[in-house]
Length: 201
Image (cartoon, rainbow, N blue to C red; front, side, top):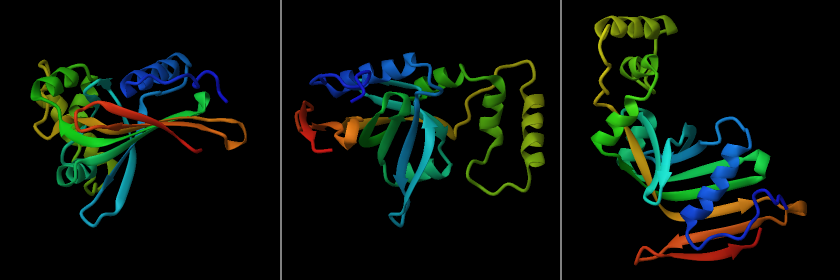
């Protein structure tokens, strides 16, 4: 059992996740906030991709995207999603399922203002998930936007914002020798408290 990740879990799943995430951040691994986001399309076919979690607290887990992207459109149609973190160095993972809700305009504006300027321009230039005739077209659009906003702040595009995944289920997994893993799950109850149990590996 990986003792760096294995420890008694709190009754609050956000606290258990926070302790594990802090270890991932301090381990020196690249992008410990990288997480697989799973959605389903209108036919019920699952899709998964890596996004970066930008913040979390006891309300949920926040990431940002183009609302007109494939994932943005899928979330608009079916907001029930799943997040899967995997930290190989810790032999640990966390699975979180819940409902994605748009963050406030104020929260999205505040985060957008912290992004590198070229990333801000890219948010305007990219018709994310739609066909692109060639990379030259994308770079030309970025250059055009750079000229438009020369000498002034780049505003947040109306089609770009964030989602907060509000959990109803957590699973904290720590790897064990001979596949005798540690699996602790939490279920949100009707009164917003959490039940806790262990699962066989």
